[in-house]
Amino acid sequence: MHMTANLEVDENLIQEALELGNQLTKRAVVEEALREYVQRRKQLKIFELFGTIEYDNDYDYNQQRDRK
Image 1 (cartoon, rainbow, N blue to C red):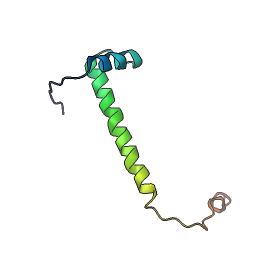
Image 2: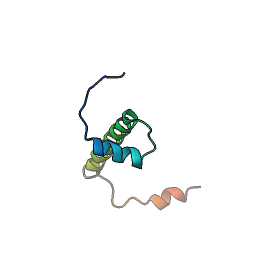
Image 3: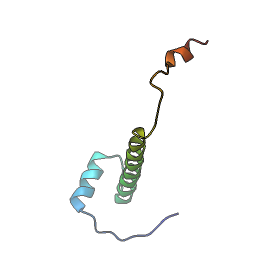
Image 4: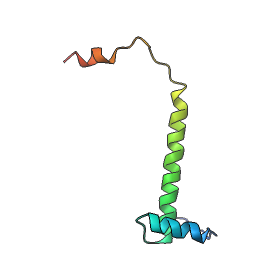
């Protein structure tokens, strides 16, 4: 699904992104930035879960390896 949007974006920021990245167009820069934004937010949500997961302090992962 594609959406057409007219956005006013800092031209200096777009230019810097074009110079740093491998994208050739402003559209490609914006799409890449949005992908990275979404990925980063998903990672942050996963990190938040680490504090909520319970685990057994006595679990020995090496025991699982020795079963071969």
